[in-house]
Image (cartoon, rainbow, N blue to C red; front, side, top):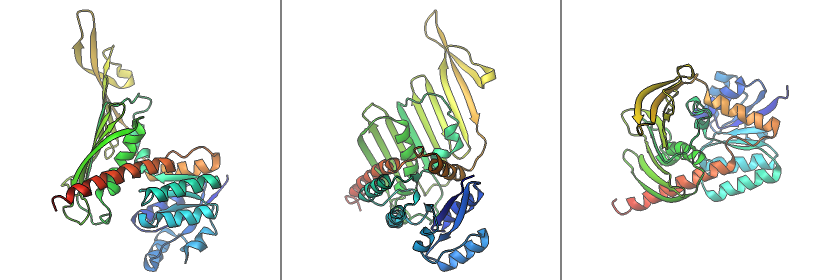
Length: 332
């Protein structure tokens, strides 16, 4: 088996999970990690048995690929250094701080012929894959990603911290350009935006209403999809997907669908509202996205979340944040 030598840059809250999951991959040799906090490095080294490096340059010299889990403001610097040395790059979200940085990193990876994957982890949530081959043609999408307050991550607005997950999913589902964005939000407990709502109108007529909050009394991560003859509810927390659809038949119990109501179209035609609940096997989404990264390196196939995907989600997130900030200047 071809072993890929991978290093981790950044050993904070997410970084330690990257270290742990990379150690679990059978085709990965975890070279070590680098973090600017020496005390934290010592703790991580002891806890996970990973080798700490004294500098970024020293780590990059020993690797074939890196996982970048530093604060967003440092993504560009680290990704550029890694790509210039010929290393494949996995970069956590948000991809970069600016679109200009994103363009440069994407171009550099293409010039070097290197893998560039962005860490939008919800793409690997089993609840999303539970849809299977069911055709998705959304007319209206509603998402809620809310959680109780946690000081971690409040250095950026909730749009870049939480909402960007659902922005990425919506963009992956809707094959159309955005024509209009209407956004609102407010800082409540911090100096950055803590709650936000964005309404995205696409050229094909689809509308997505996206809400994110880090000041809720409960936790929810759910997307609802409404389309012709079907309604889907994807619960990312409970690993559960529910599908309601119109059928010509009263349901197929063996396939997991059951009839819940009849809809009489006319004297000759009756359609049935059927329900299917898909409980997916709980899995480690981070492990799967890192496995996909290594698979892309070995096979040469396109990464499941490209640099272009990461840039597009960032672009919409920045537009939403700018619109909210502009509105807030009128009232604060």
